[in-house]
Length: 193
Figure 1 (cartoon, rainbow, N blue to C red):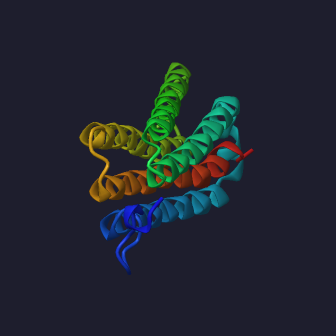
Figure 2 (cartoon, one colour):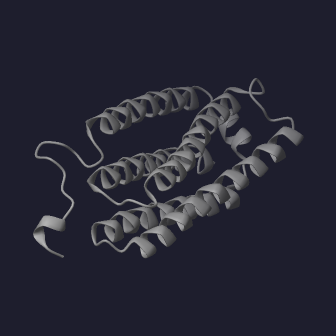
């Protein structure tokens, strides 16, 4: 690829732009505070938290963890392919990322259904309050991420210009935030007992 064809980020500007990174920092701070409160609450009632954690489906959560880590890798490969102007490969990788995100949503909703059937929803216990708050907020991030990636693709499917690459970078940064949040809450919630 010629130097003039390379996509670059302006000096001092992070990939995807400063705004997405401000959002990422705020989200990580929010989750860090929530997890800190979870740990404090856990320490005041370890047996209650351990008992409630047994209702969670660790197998589905592990599958979802693998799905998100894989989707994060595919999204990184999408941006790499775009920078190499391999648009068909990038499209295939992006669709794979979106598919894994949708699969995550489906699995999470089936887990929620199972918990509701067992009468384990918000208000049942402090553990379940944390579980539902952390995972539902994360699920909203996944839904937003999927919509964002689809929107970016639809906006730029015919024209791959530097602005499009910047949008893909912002989408990738948000998607990696979703991965990171899940990696933080997965062990706290599911490996609690």
